[in-house]
Length: 373
Ligand SMILES: [Zn+2]
Image (cartoon, rainbow, N blue to C red):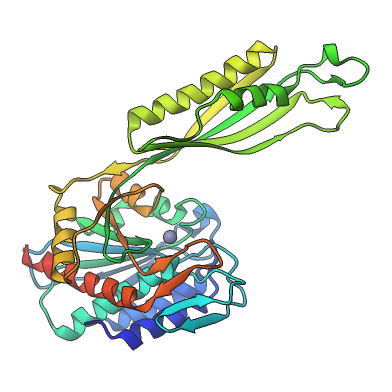
């Protein structure tokens, strides 16, 4: 069993380190000696300039003594959303939260604490294990930048576990959607709204007509779409000749995603055209989805680790993007693992200590199962 006090203390120490995206230097400096003390070769990659961060990804490797073992990696991100400055931590029995003025940062520091505690237990047990890699990456929250910039050749393990999703701890998320951003620019014609409205073509009206006709929200059980931002117009008395719309679509089915983006494009274009405006629609792939099954070795390993720690195997479908999308797209199979966080990205974010202990036990179990296959 994990050392509850040690795991909790490590989490509390990290929660007090301010590390919003792009400013992870103190987290890298804090964790490097810890991993080195545990016998890992530790390095920081040189990806930081690619996304304007102050620290690169932390990559650690420890060779094992079981040649037949599966080599596995554990991944968590070092950055958090904001606000975290001036964090005031409140302990309420088994639950850790803040005073409500900042986030807690259990996303993803509860994952990091579980990985370190799990690996510490492994080293202390003296159990034989295979090769283990730790990837603590940066600037995940603002666009998966660290994982995207990580040189593929630096991932030496054959499969991985990304501890970056909420409770239940030790749950296994084996799919995630692809995500496409949709950027629309509508051009109409400006005119005085009182003197010559007939001469104007309102870009805002074109956008509104399109949005009103569009299928948005939950399209089906694996597809969603949203219009998140609309900007346009200069003054109340001018018919607006320009509007910009930022939208998105996500789906775990590639075909449905393409259909949804096509639908959004067509509606914007035709509704603009109907009133004499013009819509230019540009879509961009933010990340690519993945879908694994019970037959994939990485899923099988996670399921046996769950049984080993005595929890029911809990497969889940993912609804968002994470580093697991990037690694799967790069050909390294990995699943997302639930850890001790709840209410991520909000001031009511919390961590339950028993879940932290369970996730650490799960990390240990993964290492032991990987050595036995
Ligand atoms: Zn996260």
